[in-house]
Length: 294
Image (cartoon, rainbow, N blue to C red; front, side, top):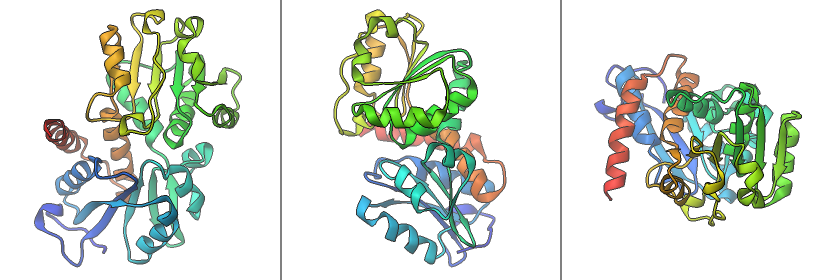
């Protein structure tokens, strides 16, 4: 399953085609295949990227099996990011720091985990002219994506970083890994605390509630600054969180930009070459429009 080609996936799958994929549950909604296959075609790489629906109980066997058959690289999405990190033979600094992996790199020894989520979000926010440095940020959730984002924001120099989670201990555990005096854990009651809400520059929903796994408590947007930016890491259809923020006149951004930039970073990690980000952006836009029309 190795060997570069000239036509990418558009030339058809052959015996030399490198196979890449994404592990998740659910995973059918993912737009990563459209984006990465466009990247392979634009870069002239003989590769194909496919979704692999994987239950939690089958993750270890799946990672072992896909490595055994020569799969060249993997992404990992909800809910496997933390578990996949524990199953890697080694972790690169970003994944080791946050204890979660969203990108698996093939090495002779086995899968090595990295995490491009946080860097991808920071790059996406930069396109919206938002720099986390010196800002007050609230993250909702404490799973694999939240862990990566929290560490990326800490590296970027946030002034205040609050992690709120339905299970407070998970927020406490995440904040402990940051080793920063300006990072705090909270439960979801903070979403109705006017003193906290009035100080925020950014709220990021790192949960998977838009995929049907629970509902966030209502946020009192009337208590927030009018220039507050609200971000949901999910993409596609507008989440209730972003819909409420928009209705309140607050700025909003979904996870499409983060998906693009974390995917471009993964492409480079797998192939050692710069990602054709323009082709990826166009493919992602087309796929998003098709998904929205359904």
